[in-house]
Each structure stands twice: as structure tokens, then as C-alpha cells.
Length: 493
Ligand code: BG6
Image (cartoon, rainbow, N blue to C red; front, side):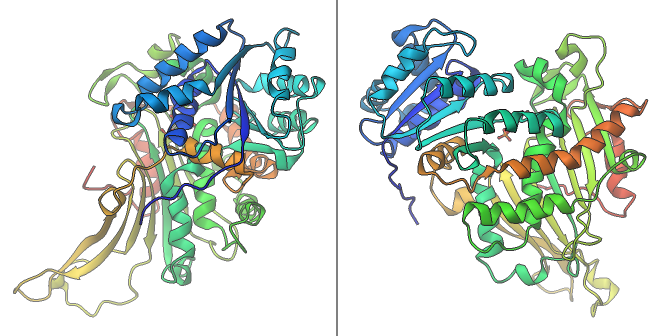
């Protein structure tokens, strides 16, 4: 099947923080790809805005470089590059000062009836002040949407304060909270797998599933983001958002439709059913780690503390957890989550392990019977594997083997996977909030995370050291092996 381009209405998109890292690495390349595929309507404008006095030409040069650096050479024909750069404009403005806002107003006035998107690619401390400016300058029309991205708070209280400050200017249907994992192709596929196949739903429960593992492993360290990362850590950076969203998609009840609130209502129920991990239980159900020097991603790398340029830090760069969902479907089924920087390999996957067969009719010579496993690989090499027992081919009696039915999406479909931001930005323009987090979802996720953070900070224990390039501290292995289970290891990695 080929991909299909669904047209969007005419829009003006204003990117605050336009000369920052997110804009350079993700937003401008994503918009360029959509233009390449003919999805950006003639006349649509992209207006960069930041504090830097870059000028129009300076921003064009910045955007040209971003495209050269982040779009494959074959995908940037000169005419499309020229067309794309022709859509750009630039305004220098600071939320704390008057300068620039009138100019932005003048530019936008030329498209007063269009869809208007304000993308706040800036730190969360600027969300409130920028929204206030937009309101004061009367730039918020009924067709205006605002896009924000994590960190959406450092705790439930700060997330509520942030939501309240944005909520003073924008109504909830105008607010698009990005979790870029929701824009990933295979995450979408999880929905297709669960709800477009009759096969899985009848066995998708505690009667048939033994446990679920969700791993998001990175080989990268904290790169240039140590300042931010040290105030966050893996639990806030990855678990509160991306991993809990994945858990919700695995665990939620079938929604009544794919309409945004139908989906978000179901995800919210899962978040509210998570068993709290508080007090001493946090020590048993969670493991924190911090990397030391080692070898990862093909070379020798420094430890976290050296990367940070500090003498000490309690920030975790790895976390493993055992979560449980207290509802009828999942009672007694553990969800083991683990994520970390500087791990052995880059892989994100969801592994659903089914219960063993109730009784074997085969004699011992047939060999052990391993449980069925469904592996949904989000990255790299997106695909789905279903591990089954089969008879080893050829003579020699009944000998059983565990082999995967293996579907690699790259092999099956010769289609370029769009970056998550391409889909998400176009969804904002379309007004489809299905892949964005609602306010109550974010706050419910924090309500589960907060007590764990509190127990950690009350504990004298430090994160356990692990060598860069390993699979994290040995305590993370013990966390799952205590229950007679093991972390899934793909032979292909
Ligand atoms: C971001 C985190 O949200 O997700 C980063 O802040 C992390 O620390 C990144 O590296 C991982 O995203 P992806 O798409 O590379 O898996």
C-alpha cells in the first residue's frame, strides 16, 4: 500500500525558540519533509521568533543549514528548498520586552482567518509569559492553537501551575501537549495491532498474559543537555511521559473510537489504576542507576559525573520499575519498565509474554516449551515478532524450537517512516488532538511519579553505578529475576 497525503488548511505557524536545538534538528526538517510531499498549502507561512537579533536573512541561512544537516541529500531538490525558504519569516522578540510583538502582529494580521499555530519550543518558564503576551497583543484568534512539550513540570504541583498559566489564555481544545513517542509510526501500529486484529484481544488480559516489559535503551549520554538533565533524571525525562504513554496504549480498554477524547479517556483510566509506589516499596519496586565511564556506541565514554563536570550528583540516568495496574484486566500482571542512557544498545520495544501452556503432551526429549512472546519493536528496525513453538524440521522425532514469526516493516513496506514531528505538526494544523496529552493525563502521570520521587529523595541510597555500555546495574536484573522472569534479549541485537 502506498502512503497518502491528506491536505491541510492554510496556516501560519509561529515557532518561538526558532533558533534552538529542537527547531533546528526536528521542526524545520519535519516541516520541510511535509513541503516536499506536497502537504503544505501555497501561501502557508512559517515565522521564526526568538530573542536573537538574527534578521530575516540570518534565519533563512539558519534554516538552510538545518535542512542540509538533517534532511538526506536526495530529499532536498533545489526547487523545494527554495519554495520552503520562501515561506519563512523572522521576528526577534522577547517575552519580557515590548520589542518585536507589534511586528509579529502586523505579519499575522495578513492571515487573520487562517489556522494559527504557536509552537513554544522554549523552556517551560517561558510558556506562561509568552501566552500572556499573545493574549495582550490580541494574537489569539478562535482558530489559534498552542503547542508545548516537556518538561511539563517537575512534579504534579508544578505541572498544575504550568497548565493553569497556559489555561488562562487557551482553552483545553486549543492546547497540544506533545509526547513525541505518540507520533512514532510503530506506536500507531500498536493501536492497529490491538484493535484491528481479532486475534489478540481475547487473550489480552491476566488470564493469558504473564507479564509485559517495556524497554527504552539509549547508547547516547546526556550530550549537551546535562544542565537540564541533572534537574530531571530518567524517571521524569522518560518514564513520566513516553514510557507511561506506551504502557497506557498496551493496557487500555478498547476506546469507543479513535476520536481524541475517546482515546484519552481510556489512557487516563489506566494511569489512575496504577498502584502507587510509595515509601519502602519504592526501594523494592524501583532501581536507580548512574553510568560510570565505559564503552558505548562504539567508543570510550566518560561517566555521568565527568560529563556533568561536577563532583557529585544523585540524578539517575537509568531506572527500572515494576508497575502494576489494579483493575480487572491486569490484576497480578507486572509491567516491568526500564530505560537508561549509555546502555549496551539503542532499542525501544514492548514485549508481551504469554503464560505457559497448561499441560504438555510431549515427552521430555522434545525439549523445553517456551512461552509465546509478542515483541513490538519501536526502534530501530521497526517491526513485530511473534515467538512460537514449532517442530524442528526433518527426521529425529519430535523436537521443539522457539522461533519468531518476524515482520520487519522496512522489508515489508518500502516507505520512508516519517519523523514523529511531521505527523504531530500536521495533526495540530488539522485540529486532531488524539496524539497529544490532555491536561488530566499529565497530572495523573505525575500523581503516580511524585511519591516515588519523594521516597527516593528521603532515602540515603544513591543511584547504583553501572558501566557505560552495560544493561544497567545488576539490581535491575535482580528486580525481575526475583520474580522468576528475565529481561528479554533479542538475538538480533
Ligand atoms: C526525549 C528525552 O524526550 O526523548 C531524551 O528528553 C531522549 O533524553 C529522547 O534521548 C529519546 O527519544 P527517541 O525518539 O530518540 O527515542
